[in-house]
Amino acid sequence: MNFLDAIKEGLDKAEQAEQACKEVSDVFRQINEDLNTYNTGLSFRKGVSALGSATAALQKLNNAHKESEFLDADKLLLVLEDDQEKKTTCEVGGWRQSVKGYPCIIQYEGEEVFCFSAGELSTALKGLFSSASFGKKLKKLLSSPIQKDSP
Image (cartoon, rainbow, N blue to C red; front, side, top):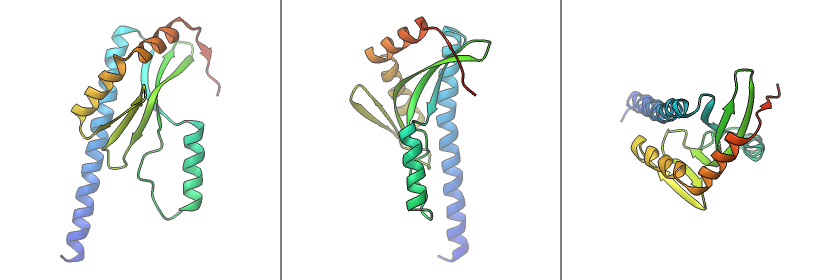
């Protein structure tokens, strides 16, 4: 194999990673479309915890030349917003996503589910959404007053 073949292989892998990340984004987009029909202002997002931010910063300091295996987001959130930019957020699970797109790892109720495709991700998220802990958190979120978002 010459170097040009290796470069082309790297470009192909980058394209595959971009496609996989797009698939994950499409799953989240579909979830949010469905949530919007249930309750306008309700959305499902990935987020970064304070611990995740600190860990990422430390890793960058200690291994400045080494890229992380995972994207920064480490939690799944339900967010309820009103039309005056006020919102309330509730963490509903853990999240890790490979920089390659897959695997995605979902954590809830003491379980850890590895997903290697959009179909597996959809199935795992349906499991999260149908869990008792998710139902309790959604009920609490919908009954809580919306807080002014801090700038």
